[in-house]
Length: 275
Image (cartoon, rainbow, N blue to C red; front, side, top):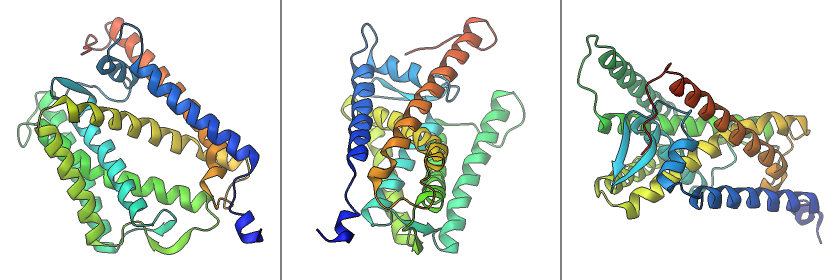
């Protein structure tokens, strides 16, 4: 076998860690779906209980998404952006989108920040520009999700990949951004149809987005500790640190949820409002 092909093959250790990572993912999914005496809706809500206030959650088809409208939009758009990057063959990108596209993405993030500030002022009973609405929270969150996905992708590529493509942009231009926004529009349409056939999968995707993003970010330090900085050429090399990152992410989510529950039960925060 040619050396170039042999170097692209996963080692036995990488295959074992990949199987372990897959098993962990399946176990988490089954655990959430089959938790005795707890509905999927409540299981997802409690699993992400420490991420946000969960006071402006979307309800579609009688099923409540586990995060507030803004964070739901952000993580759904995060996944949509990464999907477009993958479909366009830009996984190894090392550059931001063209300047005007990047500024537009920054502008969408600032819109989310402005809408969040307006909502906070309204909740505090202070003067605010307009009445907060969940549809605006969802849309502005989606805009911010594009930037979040690109930042995470470029940081990981720059830190870990040996074959990072310094001349490739994560989104090539307006067309790529337009595809992301079109997918976001389809998600909004799916929620507007108000059916559990679509809202339940979207709720699961929100959860995947949160857990996946945390796991990816938290695997960075283990990756560097394992000597993978600037050495990654195949995804299987990341199976070991990804498994560690997933464990850290789940531990972090459990700790956050338990801490918030403690604050609620102690009267330091408003009472728990489970679906």
